[in-house]
Image 1 (cartoon, rainbow, N blue to C red):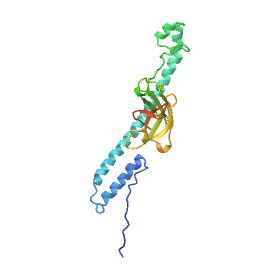
Image 2: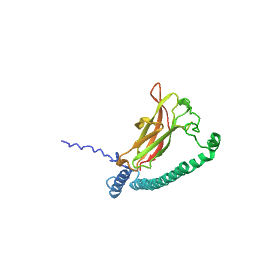
Image 3: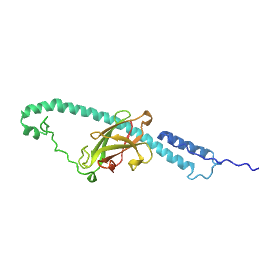
Image 4: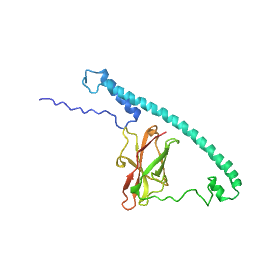
Length: 237
């Protein structure tokens, strides 16, 4: 009786890994193939090509880590500079200017000061229909460890107010991945933004990963997504 040979189904073991683990695993497979050419002599591309490509990705990961550290250091400097300017404007200039204008509203406006309870400096924001605009991620503050503060505005007004026919702004994310998503259906839903802000927290396992964000207005009547935003990415520090 002929003995049947059981079919072997090989898997790469590349899913569910961090970027570092992914590259390490690819190099492990490539080195094994290179060191044992008689077992699988006709691999295409050849092991050397795979190793070259993996090493390029590894170098890029290292560069990104260095850049992320630089960004974090610069963010600290920006925060310190902002605090100093805030103190000078509020505690030095404001009382001096208040004495100088001596209750004259016109002079205060001419010097570009706002007046508590009287003048905000802005005209009321009127946002049209959602078909005429869309939300955008204005910036992501990632200066806090394992936390993103996402800022969202309307692409036309530059303000957080939603269009007349929209009820709210919903936030979506994809953590990691070699390809940025192109639709919210492929992303994880986080929840609604409040006054154009969303705070997103992460686990330590997500450190140094890239997060892709997309936001979308929700139609008041249908409760379905309207025009979605362009993709925005930020690193988890």
